Length: 154
Image 1 (tube, helix red, strand yellow):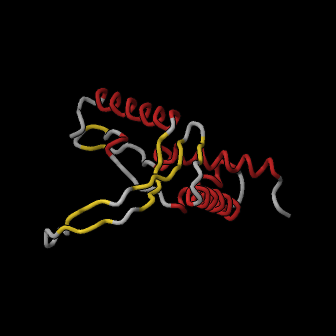
Image 2 (cartoon, rainbow, N blue to C red):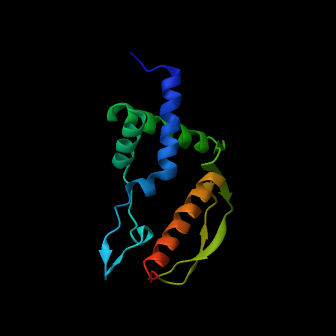
Image 3 (cartoon, rainbow, N blue to C red):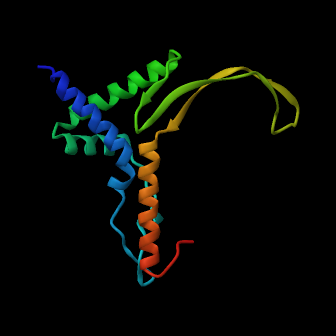
């Protein structure tokens, strides 16, 4: 049987929360480095879709299959909406939109010859306040950790 509407809404909310905090959730624990504990921000990781599905499944208490389906569906709806010229705004997370780029003149980097670049439509994303605040909190915490450990990151 398909999940109830309220369960799907909770899953989508979990997806958005996981997207908002995924970098912090997947960062490894600090390790000793040169006699000091390395700051968490010194390690940057890429989070794959599979990792995100695992985190969503764990937080929402659902199967990985359902979490993957909800994530894929949410991303598909966002892509389709933006491709159709609509703006998708997720309060606290950000806004997906598209922007028209006018035709312009450019240069071939190999020959230096002038060429025409066709007009196009490109997707854009602007971060929401909640997303920016989460990044600032994470950065502030990592600066405090570096200061307490007596070293500054390069």
